[in-house]
Image (cartoon, rainbow, N blue to C red; front, side, top):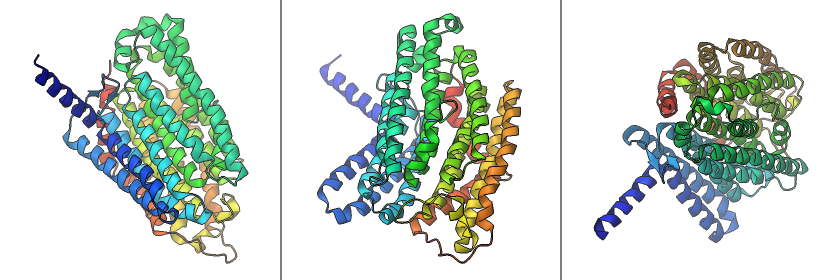
Length: 495
């Protein structure tokens, strides 16, 4: 081949590879721009400018993902270490949207608490880049790189309130236990690589057949990865870090983690287990079924006795992870479609609940007790209505998105033969109604006159958008369901 032709091929291949990961590349560009700008601008202007770069970066990445979803074809990139398929694009749209909501919510909170704003937004961008890498990874190596980029950013964000002992304690706990879980994941990946002879997920699916279920090396690898993955989605019995970290971290960080980390970890689970080990489904389905059952039991029963709103929502998140695992275990187009639908709507209802709590915070710290919600209906009726929508959505009341999300997950579980698990999920959903409605009692209870709860424009935007989505995506779920079906296509069609 002539030298000129070879060079042309190299440039075209490089352009094709960059195109497949265009949403990530776009966000990385704005991330670097924000870092450089933070170095040269006066401190008084850094926060607002960095927040603007972050929002524009997330919006541009979101637009790029939407464009590729509608007009471009997905394929592998970088020697099949990454992909730009619809599964990756679905999560990139989710993560970019979450980034915009987080910046909008945190902007006024950081100023009220006197925290460094520019550094926070830069860390959020880094964490979202790690999430996007996880969603687009088609190699165990790329999966681990995305996982560590996400984790390292979150370790720092959890300890961002430098003068708050609980924040520092949360960061230390998350760092130590997170490093332990990462070791499990890495060791499990090493064993699977030893059994398959490759780290590329599609190649693993081809090389490991049903007979590999008798290989102790592969079984131990699945077990170790399952432990690490369960930690990342806050699933029992590997959940003990979650309430402490959620309570100690600044509330915008907790809101961001509760949605983003869970969605990224489920993208990783589906990519590795459903796409990489389809012939060994009975082995990892059994493991995940036990984890799902434990998560629903522990999460719902422990949430009943909580007095902190952040800890209550932490245990709620543990239970929600159990519900989503039903769709992962069911697999197939229906199960994965339900998983993608639920993860997307979970962003709005759970983030919105934390957003309301964020506005209760004062200069002295976060306020997350039930007493802090007293009289919210009088102090700020919009926030009270929004909190009601979010709690009823999480509980699964129709016609909210929570009801339809659970309906799709439970239907797929029954169709796949996991009726016992769905029956347990329904019973635990009934239990959850108690503590979700319990949150609303002080919100609408008559209380002595107290100061009004102020809300900035950006915070109001995040809450109103989340509340509207929690209703509209339940009343009209068709469009999101179709998007979930398209997004699940590359995994649902795996061998």
